Image (tube, rainbow, N blue to C red; front, side, top):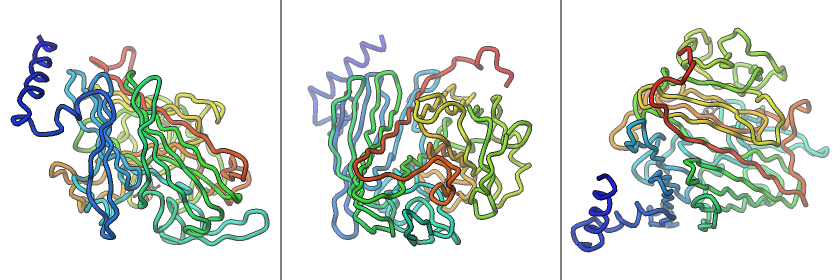
Length: 385
Ligand code: GLA
């Protein structure tokens, strides 16, 4: 019956184009669809790429910031819902926002005091987060226009975004060519494959800063989180790691067993209160392995993240304060979205004991993160939550 209705609907939109808004049939068919998204104040055109997989899952990514504006996945009843925070139009993204959906670079997370020394030379970066450098600086990769090219994927539909960061940009050495391929697989995975090449040694740490809300709205405190991480990197009050790798066991940081994000959040004493910490993943970095999963009991949506990165920054939307008006009239209050930024540890450029973020000429930086979506009809079998 459902199939019949779908067929009728498709026929209607094909045979009576005047009745269906233009583009509707095009953007619901499996494939990659390009449309203009708007213009920057300097006149640069920005496009939006819509990826639709065989099951109707839809990801929309714009060339500004190689940033995902929408991601529609089914709930346990098969109803599609948008599970990322964002805006309705380019102007709001340009006005400024806390990295909604963006590709982050050249170095994601913080570099203490905006300084690092490499091969005997000290580099100075912009300090855009109190005393520190954050997410690539004042004009990071989230605020530039990337070029885009649909690419073939054996397991889904894909677009490659490319940005060439000039030597000295935001204080970093070397011309860096960065790419990120967004693939939406027919197995309901969103895969992010990054590469980078440089002509001078430079730190690199690319990630994605989507704010997820698997219920589509409201706070995320009842989402159930499960980390494959026995340790984390404790931080000072400017969120720079102390250098210690500390066990989470028994602490407020412990998600080695599934528990709701809100269950112990009030025990944190930071300001604004909430999680904004790097987890040290179990298993060998460089190999794709399960990192973290999140489950929303109301919708039944389950997100499992796999990565080859050594860490994940878990951020519970602490700085959201109700001042940003999002898509479809949403108001984003504290804890209305969470980020799981797969990455190297913060301030790695100044911490010799942490895995290195230095890329040298002749080498290629490569990393992959997979977001796997499914639903559970009820609570997970055997779950205690
Ligand atoms: C990152 C940081 C947070 C915050 C958000 C954006 O995740 O770790 O401290 O700056 O970005 O608000």
